[in-house]
Length: 417
Image (cartoon, helix red, strand yellow):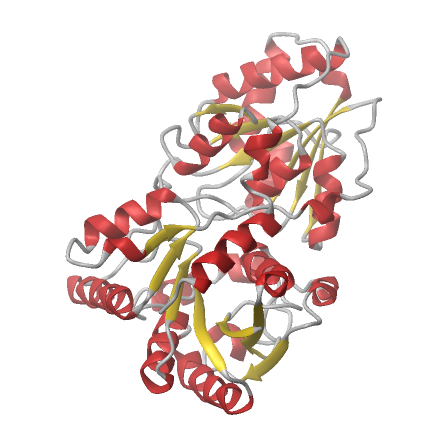
């Protein structure tokens, strides 16, 4: 069994989608010859905890660290609302390159060296965001002389919300990204669009070491899953409303359906599971949907899965400004739930491509309420007439099975120098 040193800032008992990829690699990689040794900060500061995830990663040795960054140093269990409202912190963060987690680098480095004294490390894996993890990975590679795998769950310099107040910081960020590419033996990303951007931004890098390792879903999470309530038609959304992601387009679509006197609307229920803002709650009253809409607040991963499997239609929302390289982690849980997807997202991006290629649902532009209304009308009609919904093609679904993804990733690790 080979040892993989994993640098993961987000790790159980913290929750949210950024944790899932690491959790599932830690869970499944031992089946393919790789033993995970994890470096992660002590759990504190975050407003989202999911202790049940710890049960999936009991086999891993974890070296906990301190960190000097805003999240780690903030009061325990900050509320999601507080984070949304902290515009001052957002403005400060724009001056920090590559991100506000640079204060974790020395602690991650120290813990990585400690782990290497106890285990014979065969490879190093850093996952980002935060991109500071990659810088810690580069330092550990230079000291330990072990191959480095840099994993991109989101794009770095080409990410939608990467904004630099001055051009000098933009250039520095680009140089750091190039530094990571040059020093990595393998670069993985969750979609082809991120890889395309890396090739375009760094034409002189060795593109042969760039590989797609998709996000996915774990079939074991859906064992014994709940079924929809036959007495109502439920639309569900799981995830955080942030920036231009809001329920507005969905509410506008329902308003249009009401004007059209669409049958079945009296049985419509809408459930939002995840962090939200006061402005999102205000929209419910504005659109007169108080008896239709329910906000659950943050839920654990397994509770979110239950929301998905109890729904008749799953709504995916992204802002119109979000770039083609964004694929929300929730999309793959939606696929695993095998419920139809109605997506209000940029039609030419990675998320739209995945949905349409899998035959998993329909896509309308982010702010196209009329297009979304048409999708919902079709689904309500099928539900009223008790028409069976065509499941996702099993062969397409298999591409996103976390265990099979871990197997493919293990094969890539076996090929490291």
